[in-house]
Length: 105
Image (cartoon, rainbow, N blue to C red; front, side, top):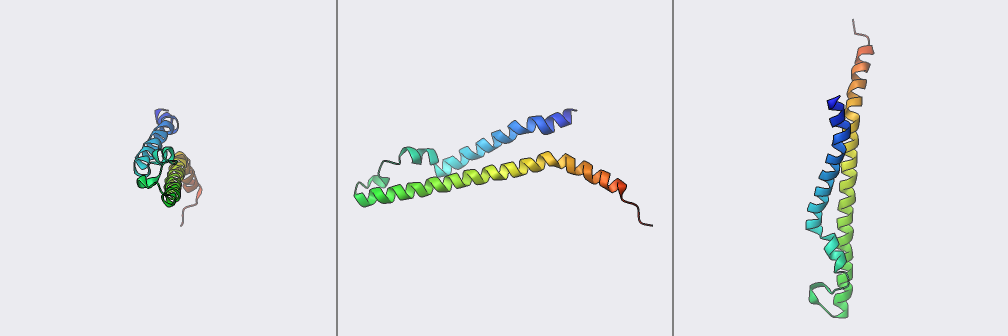
């Protein structure tokens, strides 16, 4: 019973914590929140109209790349967590399926 509680109940919050840690690490690289906060400011202190336009596009590209990485990480975590949840079921099904197969003579 303890194994099932650990496997199905306690693993969910652990996976969420690991995902949030991964997002924090990636946000340290992509700085999505800080980039969004500074969207109205010119990039590299270039106050010309060309600098302002280029700054908006570069910041949008950085935000989009960061969000893509966050979504990709969420999908990978969800996929592997689903495999984690199905692993005992697959093992039991394969054991039961192996018991019903007739032995070759």
